[in-house]
Amino acid sequence: MSLFGKDFICTEDWELEDIQKILVLASEMKKDPHNLRWSSVLKNKSFLMLFYNPSLRTHLSFDMAVSELGGHSIYRSSEMSWSKSKQGIASSEALKDMARVMSRYVDGVGIRMCMNAIKQYGEGHQFVRDFAHFADIPVIGMADDRVHPCQALADVMGWSEKISSENDINALKGKTLLVTWGSSGLARPWAAVQSHLLLAARMGMNIKLAYPEGYALDSEVRQQTKIHCEKNNTTYEEIHDPNVGYEDTHVVYVRNWVTNKAYEQGEFQYQAEVDRSLSLKEWIVTEAKMRKTENAIFANPMPIDRGREAEEAVIDSAYSVIYDVAENRKHAQKALLALIFGA
Ligand code: CP
Image (tube, rainbow, N blue to C red; front, side, top):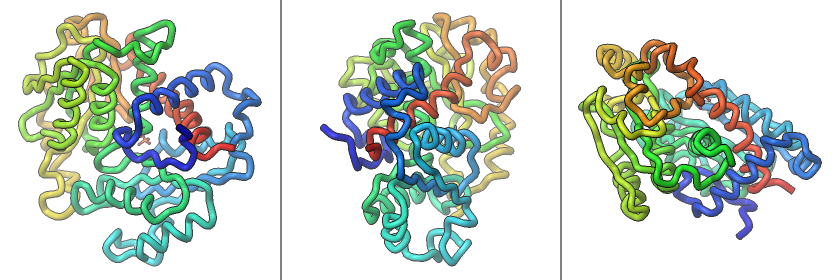
């Protein structure tokens, strides 16, 4: 089936075989970034990036992806992305008007909306979905409050590369992933961790999800992850002890995320989240914990909080894949852009 014109908002919207097409093409592009087969597939095409929250990796990796495909990218910060208002969704220009006008200017749109750009959990994801509903062009989620699908692509690509020297997309089948909450002063949204839980389970990994009391993720996402595990005959386990779960694990993924009360008062409780998170210092990935694993690789979507989410020695170790995954953002997004709106 042609992927041309398709939105990429959540990996769950896509067939697994189509996601695998992105990963296969991404690997080819990584080996030969400037091959003439793809160096001008976005010629005369423009990609608009609406960032309602800051970004380093997502912004630059999309910028470079579009550039290496011969297209033109346009960056709009939060201040520039609300039309006629800085007050957020409730008092902005109607979303349908924004989406319809943008569709007349550009060939694709990426949107980031999470953290303090929203007042309650789910609002950012709904904004991206509603934008896509009214737009006539492909819409890509660049991290909302619920999912971060491009990060999940880069994650599984990076883990597969390390686990299989053949760069086999089936390399993760039957392997075990420990996703552990990490202490941090950064108060991260649920998006990245939820996206890779969904995709890793779907790709056949056993899942262990470790987090302190009060940090349960979206119940629908956890339920869907369990369903994927059941379908694949793999295991799903939840753990509430920072020292448990490392045994028999092939990928250790640490990520800070906020509590399920982060939006309870009608706006994002940044400082309360940071204060609580910093009090849970035992939730750190250490070299001693990594030694309990099956020579696991260490992963994190970045930015990483050094000395809090993981020890410096773990982050800088030979088994750390954090920079490979960050690099893969560009390759995976190049493949995605080429497939959904390339010539
Ligand atoms: N991992 C990620 O999305 O990083 P940025 O917030 O810097 O884009």
